[in-house]
Length: 103
Image 1 (tube, rainbow, N blue to C red):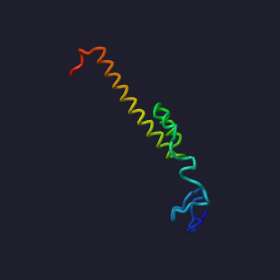
Image 2 (spheres, rainbow, N blue to C red):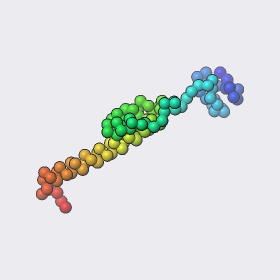
Image 3 (cartoon, rainbow, N blue to C red):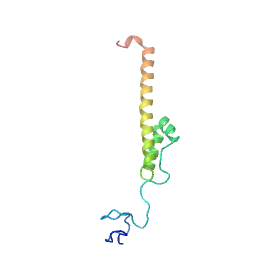
Image 4 (tube, rainbow, N blue to C red):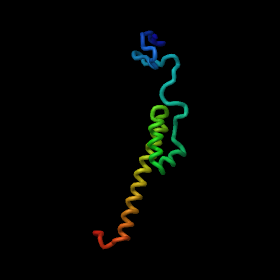
């Protein structure tokens, strides 16, 4: 196959020309039209970080913007949930055995 812009020979399955960078045969590549902000799924990814990580792995090639949003929400959720868990654990231990805490 030959490049539609520069005319050099390129591989048959090339999406872009290796020499001039032109797209070939109108083939689509990169983010799709459905890509964009993660929207309300961000709340689910925040509350359930495992869902966010799974969505990131599923979307990372086809919808990179949504994948990034899902991953960010999952990481923030993991951080906040971990912080709240540590705080509750500390308060619970302090209430159960206050004589063992060093002030």
